[in-house]
Amino acid sequence: MIRTGEQYRDGLRDGREVWVDGEHVRDVTQHPAMQPIIDIRARMYDMQHDKTHAETLTYRENNGIHSIFNRLPREQQDWHDKWKAVDTVMGDIEGVVTRVGDETVGEMWSLYDGQDVLNEIDPQFSKNIANHVQGVIETDVFHVSANTDPKGDRSKPPQEQDPDMMVHVVKETDKGIIVRGAKYETAAGYADQAFLKPTVGAWTNEKLSDYAVGGIIKMGAPGVKLIARSGFAGRASKEDYPLANKFDEVDFLMVLDDVLIPWEDVFFYRHTRAAAYIRGTLHRYSAFPYTLRLLYVADMMIGAALWNAKQTGLDKLQAVREKLADLVCYREGINAHLTASIALAQKSPGGLLMPHQSILYAGRIHACANLPQMMHIARELCGGQICVTPSAAAFSNGDSKDWLTKFYSLNDAWQAEDRRKLLAFARDLLNSDYANHRLTFVQFAQAPHFNHLAAVYNAFDFSGPLDFVRRSANLSERVNGSL
Ligand SMILES: Cc1cc2nc3c(=O)[nH]c(=O)nc-3n(C[C@H](O)[C@H](O)[C@H](O)COP(=O)(O)OP(=O)(O)OC[C@H]3O[C@@H](n4cnc5c(N)ncnc54)[C@H](O)[C@@H]3O)c2cc1C
View 1 (tube, helix red, strand yellow):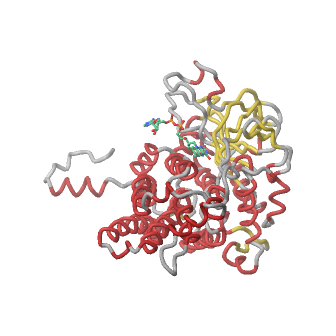
View 2 (tube, rainbow, N blue to C red):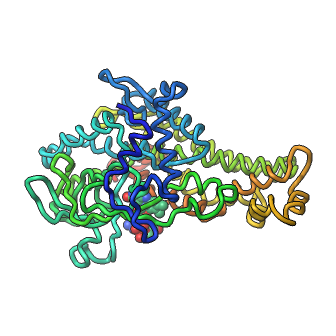
View 3 (tube, rainbow, N blue to C red):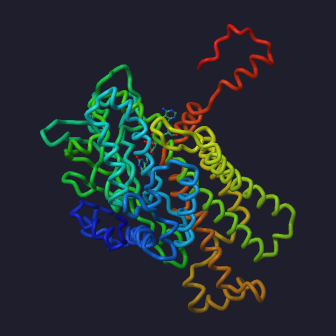
C-alpha cells in the first residue's frame, strides 16, 4: 500500500500531545510552524500516485505497490533507483529536506542484518525487526529516529543522577515494557513512529542494563509528549525568507512518561551487546541518503554564488572562478563518494547490499565537516549585500521603492526584483537563523563528528596500509597487524 498525502495528514490527527512555544497544538497539520513541512511530506506521498512520478517513486512486490524508499536494497540498481527518487522529490519541491523517512528507515535494515546476533542474545525479539521492516513497506508509514537522550551529567552513570536522563525500562507487564525518559528527534511531531535505541552510549562491563532498550514508539501512544523548538516558518515574510518558510524541519524533545512498548514492538531489551551492536552499525545504509542531501545543498550554494557573480559581472574574474571551483570540488567530492560506494557496494551479513562502508563514511565526513568552510566561500562570493539588503516590503512600498529599484537594477536582464529575490534566497541559505540551524543539523542530526570518525575507523580495512609498510620498511613477519 502507498499512502496519499491526505491519509498521512489524517494519521497525524491521532490525539498526539504536541507543544510549541508553550501552546498545546490540537492539529499539527494546521500549525504555521509545521504546516509547510507537513505539506511537503504530504506532497511526497501524493507524488507516488501521480502518473508523472509513480514509476520513479514506487515498485511492485507481492501484488502490491510500495515506496521505492522503503525497498530493501539487494542490488546496485536499488541504490540508483533510490538516488533517482530523491532527485525527483527535490526537483519537485524545489528545495532540500532530509528527515522525511527514506533517511531513517535504513537504521532498521542495520538491525535486520543483525538478526543472528539478536538470536544468540535473546531469540524472542529477532522476528520483531523483520516484521517491522516489512510493516513499513506495507503500510508506508513515516518513520524517524530516536537516539539522543538529554543525558545530563556525563561524568556520572545514569543511576547516580535523575535516572530519566537516559531512556530506561521501568516495568515489564503482560503487554510489554514500560519506558521512561526523553529523546531529541527531528520531525517527531509530524511523523508516525520512531526507532528508539540507546544514545552513543558508554557501556562499562555490565551485560544487562535497563538502559539497553530498542523498539518502536508510536507518536500517538499514551504518555508520549512532543515539545517542539520554535519554528522558523511564519516568523517573517516568505519573500524575505523563502527557505525557512517552506523547508524548516522542526525538532522535538520527545518525552516518554511511562510509555508502553508492546512486546511485538520490542527489538532488544536488557542486553548491552545488542545495544552495542546497533550503535556500531546504525548508519550503514542511512548515511547514504543523509550525505546525498548535501549534494543538493552544494548545488544550491554553487547556483546562488554563480548567479550572483553573473548579475554583477564578476564571473569573468579568475579569482572568482577559483572560488567557484572550490565549491565544485566539494560538490563533486560528495558525488564521487556516493557513486563509488554504489559501484563497490558490499554484501551485508543479512544478505542486503550496503554501499561500500569506508567510502560512504569518508564521504559523510567530507560532506559534513567541510560544509562550514563551503558556506563561507559561497557567502563571500555573494558579497555583503546578502546581509544589508532591505525587505521585500521596502522594495514594493512607499518612498523606498524607487530608490531600491534604482540601486538594485543592474542592466536590462537583471532588474531589481530578481536581484532582491536572489539575495533573499542566498541569505536564507547561508546567513539566516534557518541557515545556521541547518548547518548544526548537518553536524549533529545523524551523529556528532567524533562518531562519524569512529565509523570510518571501524569500517576501513587497515590491513592494506599495514602490509604495504611492513614490506616497504622491511619489517619482520612477527609484527602483529591486528588493531
Ligand atoms: C538540529 C538537530 C537535529 C537532531 N535530530 C536528531 C534526531 O532526529 N534524532 C536523534 O536521535 N538525535 C537528533 N539530534 C541529536 C544529536 O544526535 C545530538 O545532538 C548528538 O548526538 C550530540 O549529542 P549532544 O547534543 O547531547 O551533544 P554532546 O554529547 O553534549 O556533545 C558536545 C560536544 O562534545 C563532543 N563529545 C561528546 N561526547 C564525546 C566523546 N565521547 N568523544 C568525543 N567527543 C565527544 C561532541 O562531539 C560535541 O562536540 C539532533 C541534533 C540537532 C542539533
